Image (cartoon, rainbow, N blue to C red; front, side, top):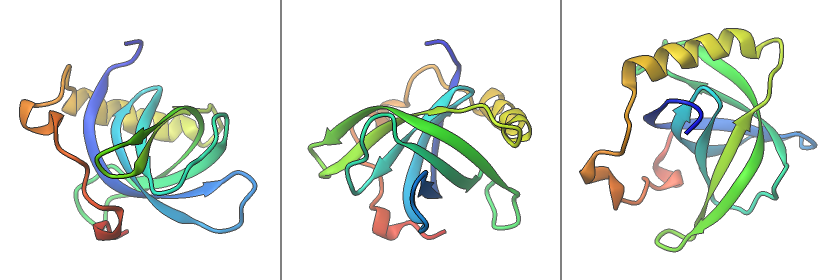
Length: 130
């Protein structure tokens, strides 16, 4: 791997580049260069999107804004959802978010998933509340 990563499961709101509305997804496996996210619907490769999410544990934690591009996609046969690899895109607002992600990853770094997490499906998107 090029970047360290940390186990991460949080709801995030997203907006596809050419869309006006926001949706909800489940963010997972965050690193300095990108993250894995779970979507209910197919999103084509190279699609750009904005994500908004909190790295903190409570509702008062600051929200960060990220831009990313879909670099891989796979259907999860256990859940009929899509796992999407999102590569972060450098923007002026990303500098501040990048530092916060780096700090989070350094404090939560995992080289591998805990054994108990490897074969579990992610929580249902409908059970995730922003």
